[in-house]
Length: 166
Ligand SMILES: C[C@@]1(CC(=O)O)c2cc3[nH]c(cc4nc(cc5[nH]c(cc(n2)[C@H]1CCC(=O)O)[C@@](C)(CC(=O)O)[C@@H]5CCC(=O)O)C(CC(=O)O)=C4CCC(=O)O)c(CCC(=O)O)c3CC(=O)O
Ligand SMILES: NC(=O)C1=CN([C@@H]2O[C@H](COP(=O)(O)OP(=O)(O)OC[C@H]3O[C@@H](n4cnc5c(N)ncnc54)[C@H](O)[C@@H]3O)[C@@H](O)[C@H]2O)C=CC1
Image (cartoon, rainbow, N blue to C red; front, top):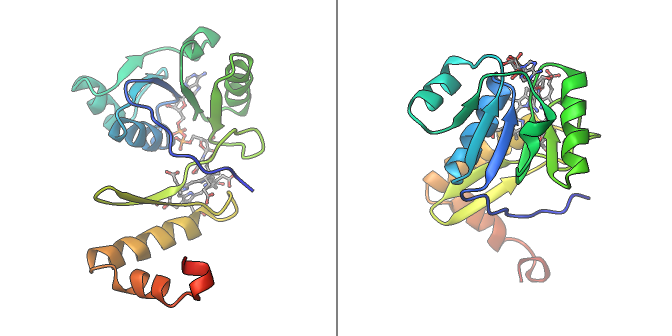
């Protein structure tokens, strides 16, 4: 069983190592939550390069080095190298920093959920890593329903036995 939390990352340094699509996904979410996103990678995909050009993220154009982890609140290891991602995880752990490794559920301290946001309400969906595609399908179904007034979701909640909906 995973322990669910809603983490405050506003203005906190969050390190993303790697410059591909997974790094982009992680950087985008962190940025939308107000984090100070630092990306380390010898190269960036066009979307991350654009985010750097407009000043949304800090960029260190280099291969990963253990010093990059220092002072991070969170670390995301999203390179395409198992050895590099594992080393990032070990360095983060030494400094007591939580780390997610894109290629190792076993070594990650936390997973990323699918999120539906509706005003101040956020719903996070996880399958504990067993089926990310299911988490995404549930998000899309719930988002479509909420846009439509949330009737199916709300009626589903109302149809729960009193003992469950209390
Ligand atoms: C452990 C975890 C990562 C972590 O958090 O550490 C993880 C792991 C892996 N995902 C893989 C594949 C895909 N992931 C997606 C999508 C999402 N994956 C996300 C989270 C997580 N994915 C974490 C567990 C979440 C949970 O608990 O359910 C979401 C929710 C959030 C996000 O990533 O932003 C986001 C949906 C966002 C949204 O749109 O709502 C799609 C669909 C798509 O991209 O369209 C596919 C292709 C379809 C498929 O194959 O299922 C693979 C195989 C890689 C390979 O072998 O090629 C692994 C590796 C493995 O399983 O080890
Ligand atoms: N968690 C998930 O949902 C999924 C995870 N993955 C895993 O995520 C990882 C990354 O995937 P993509 O972004 O698609 O890969 P990608 O190949 O597009 O990007 C990898 C990036 O890492 C950078 N890199 C390589 N060595 C580096 C180093 N020493 N220091 C810093 N940066 C370095 C490269 O320059 C490149 O920008 C892969 O290991 C893949 O197995 C893949 C699909 C889904």
